[in-house]
Amino acid sequence: MKSYPITKSRRVRSTPFTSRIEKQGVTAYTVYNHMLLPAAFGSIEDSCEHLKKDVQVWDVAAERQVEIFGEDAANLVQLMTCRDLSKSKIGRCYYCPIIDDNGNLVNDPVILKLAENRWWISIADSDVIFFAKGLAAGNNFKVEIFEPNVDIIAIQGPKSFALMEKVFGKKIIELKFFGFDYFDFKGTKHLIARSGWSKQGGFEIYIENTESGLDLYDYFFEIGKEFNLKPGCPNLIERIESGLLSYGNDFDNNDNPFQCGFEKYVNLDSEVTFLGKEKLKKIKKEGIKRKLMGVHLETDKISLTKSLKITDNEGNLMGELRSACYSPHFKEVIGIAMINEPYCKSSVKGKLKIDGNSVSVKVCDLPFI
Ligand code: THG
Image (cartoon, rainbow, N blue to C red; front, side, top):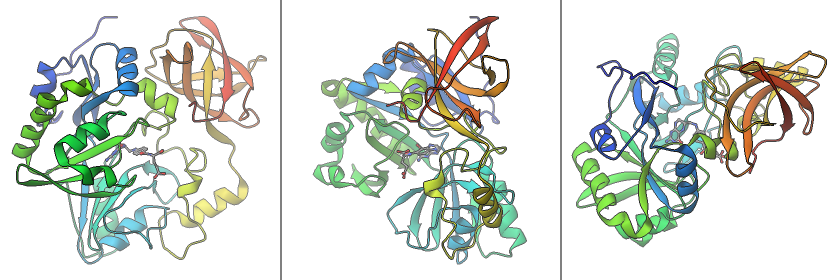
């Protein structure tokens, strides 16, 4: 397939690591939060296998931070999410659906509590900053809202623990999942969390001091040979197999958290106030009519650029395929689909058309692995 380069500009922002990953062989980008997000370093099948075995460094600076600072910071953050943060702790990350007044999803960030009055919302691809500013203005909240100079690099894969221990010492291994703390690199402190958009284990380094961050990036590759360290990026295959959802692909502002399997992050019985709470109670009471499910496709090739309709064998609409890839593990195409009732059950069969050819579809539960 012929490919067409994206022109870089001030609007399609580079990251501090762009020149490095281009020397290291990045072969595709996507645009995320108006910023370049690497999408491939050659074969995504090979990268997936490497990620499951060794360790990779990812330029995920496009996971931008929205900082909420000031005396109403906690109120504003809580107003935006259906997850109860009243017992949240400083030094912890929380995966939090952001919900609008209709009970629909606006984003699915990781939220970091830096202090009672200081939070980072580490966003997926939608303009949360304007949503936050609108809510703050409408509620007369005393807060400052801005995008701080923070660029994340993720260290992902089973050997990330040994690599990180070598750079930061034994203490980094004691970080609990979704905990964060500050760690020293050559005299500069960096916020490091045990998190990342893969299920292979790892860390995310929130770089505020760009110069030290670039030095750290280069240092990883200086010492990383013994761990077979390679540059990488969020991997389509690994994330679908693991059931990590992607805002804008698997779900968007037309979907609610119950349809997306986020019920464990929806706290309707708590005292806290958040946008869309009454709507979500109503949706829960009435029950949902569609749900994100896994699908197996009887084919070995797919390149999805828009959603595809899935029908049952009589031609009735069953749902739509929203993400898909060839999985070397399953030796067929797997995907994530929004499936309508009464088809949201494992083993239900249907079909879809790819390039004019009919392909069998089988519904399954998420995650695949
Ligand atoms: N890290 C950081 N920011 C991000 C992402 C990230 N912003 C954009 C995007 N990714 C947000 N989406 C997700 C989706 C899933 C997870 C994190 C961010 C995730 N989920 C775990 C899981 O599903 O097992 C844990 C969730 C939990 O607490 O139960 O890690 O990757 N900084």
